[in-house]
Length: 311
Image (tube, rainbow, N blue to C red; front, side):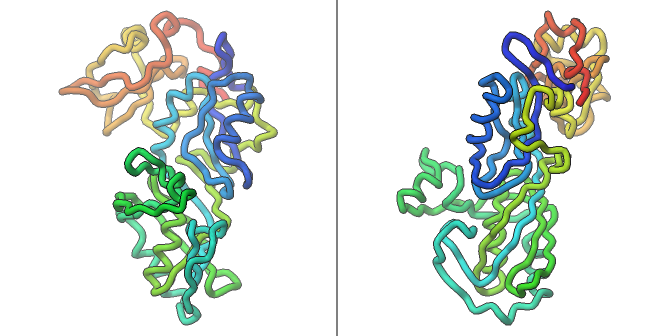
């Protein structure tokens, strides 16, 4: 079992396979009751109609969610050519139709390749992006559409496979955080001289956290929590020396030696595998804590099974 239970309840990470019809907030609310704590948050919102991987931070791991949000995401979906909708997916109203029967699969593949790499993407109106202090989806519900500035995103992989319908392709997209797959579907249609929308969106991975290890909501309990150290498994790990452990517990700046390679952030662990803190670059040859999980008084204490990295 991977859990740590103290006065404030358990700490850890749950990889949930969200089903359609639930908002990400609904999943968090339900999980609070299942886990016996109000300290639950999610990383990377999934739309109600979407399914798949939703990461829940519990207890102290809520403080790590920003690092998990930054991880790349992988999705599968159907992209439907010839029909545009108000939401860019099949939940919206049809706003335009196009005759695209002459589009070949080779042309679709070529267009998908052109939307791969570093691109600029206009956020959809049905998104949580804020304009003048108000979220776009709130404005959309009021029937208001505003100009949105393109944002840089990275599409690492955009592959398409044919289906039985020449105007529907199955797509798999691996992309940076902040990428809207529904916008990719719409852009694919535009590049091909018409329009398009998305359906059956499923997030299959967030970083290394894949749907194969995800739990359904009715399986969520303190016994299935991954440890704080495991929550940071996609980041470089740095082993704290005995001298470092107390300093890290007090949140002190450290000298950046050969252990801190790359750009960070770095997960700093003690000799038992317990996550003490997450450090980031600082001035000159130093690194500073961005999150400290183990206060100085705890840092030298015996680890629980969860802190030792068990599953």
